[in-house]
Length: 241
Image (cartoon, rainbow, N blue to C red; front, side, top):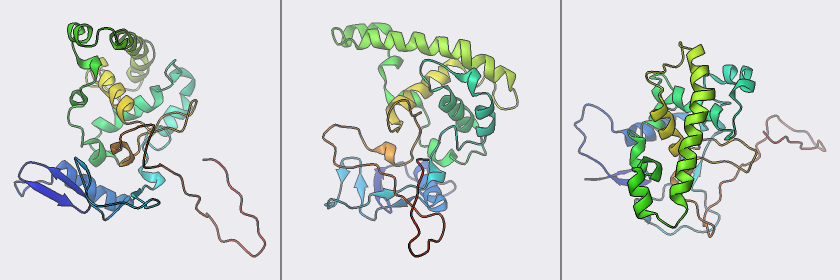
């Protein structure tokens, strides 16, 4: 059945009437957090109506962004940031995702529930080594994936596992395993947003549905918003936050 929810058309199983689908839950969450979607429909194949240049596709409030500064455990991550340093710089975000993805009370649960199995991302790191070597021979990808997997295992063993073991009230090594950590690394690789190094990556609901390409036709922009009333001749001042 093709179901249309405001601006997204997607094939999904017939709803049994007892429980909302992950997509319906996500769209309800968008309304709750103030994430405003364009009224023009989208489908898996692309846009269904012509978009003019300058049209707003969606508006995302900062409260909907998911990163180490917005998670419920942000104070802990900030306090312990020196112990979370790594070559990737992603450990705080990945700890955030480990916590929020498995927390039943997560503010981002409807967003993260759109991905029931990160292995469906079909990243080469989830292929067997034989498949990578045979199908991607000569591309340099098998060697890059092998390096990534080695670095992920080292990062988890040396940084993440000791940290989550110290905080059993928030993480469980039996649940927050190396396998799950690797899946979340692939998730961040596929969907992260970030301005540029050394800015840490973040997860941006809706923006992560757009594929990256150099010859792009959409920009992700921040809009300056006034915090306080201003008076005649008063200067407007900002900070990059």
